[in-house]
Image (cartoon, helix red, strand yellow):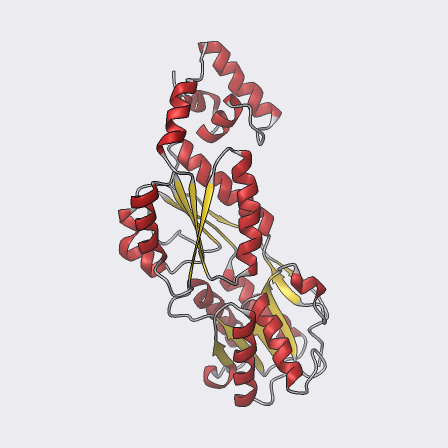
Length: 334
């Protein structure tokens, strides 16, 4: 009798069985009772020596983050580390630039540190398609979807970026805006930027509005200063803008500063909507209207899926967490 056998007979995952046997939180009363019935039925005893050796063999969970100024990732990782600590997993964080090859770095980490699993925050799916097959430990993409990649050891938890961006543009259109600028990431190496761009373009097309990328779109890293500089460029190209959709709240905050420095007001002259729902947006002036991602839910699901995959044989899982609009003071009707 093994943990896998108990999981099969009880109907619960290997991870849930493991947490029950180790008296860890995160298990419902019903699940705990059912699992312990099976344990008592077969007189199962947890091999503590084997558990100790298993923990010694690997080096925790590696968390790879692309982008050093992404406040959303910081908030999610803080929650993830809390969830992992509850499950007795150590974690190590690795920061790389937005244009880095995260899979190449992950392969090196696997070779040098031998992690039990890997989390990726910020991903270029082209890198995964090219070389992820060299990684054999359980992995998960956080805020990007792995569904189209088809790797058995690669799961994902994300928001529907395309649909959320479409909603943001339609929100502005609903408030009477037609000349709308977009501040986005570099589509060449940011899957998130590409999906949000696709969603924005879809909203323009569905509302019979022509979107001139040459005049209405500026690429930048997900960073406050980058958002500021991109907004400066956008204002020089298009002086008749009435609204801007920024693909990240940090970019939106930089954009608002740029608008103000040009003698304009938000939202009186130009409305601004962001994306992510980071805490600073609630206290900024004007309070930021934004598309909010459920950070706690994303962090919890990512932690559960990865640790369950580490502790047992589990097929890849692709979770999509709903977004919602948080109205603020940065958008007005015209």
